[in-house]
Length: 156
Image (cartoon, rainbow, N blue to C red; front, side, top):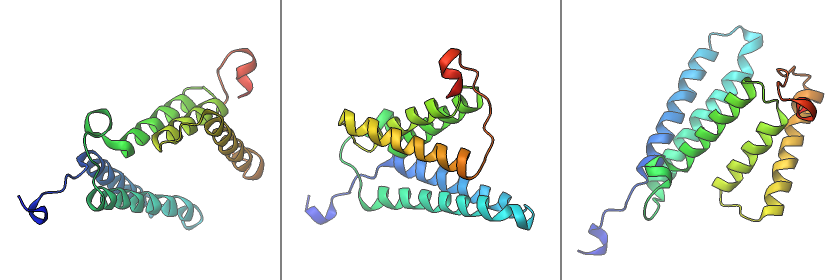
């Protein structure tokens, strides 16, 4: 078969995941538009970026398909990232505090992007977690739910 006639494999998992992310962002944007003027801007911007990220994932899946099998039976890297974020949100809302789940989320996301050097991985995860903590707790003064972890871990 000539090279021009070969079908390029499309990363179907990334295609599906990108579509779901784009749809979730669009729905969140439409819901945010119903907020009052003072509350609308932040969730609308974040939702629009989420929808654009989903479109970008779809575009990447079509433009640069991966060779071979996708991760975890076809759900793709973006799907695994969504799963990691869902686990983080569940742990955070379930009383695991902010620092520990966020640190573990950063490690998971870095591993998904291919970072394998242990020291670098831990340093970047700690830096991003610390930066997020400073941004939300110190600068924005956002109250976080209390941690239900025992002993020393209760502060994190």
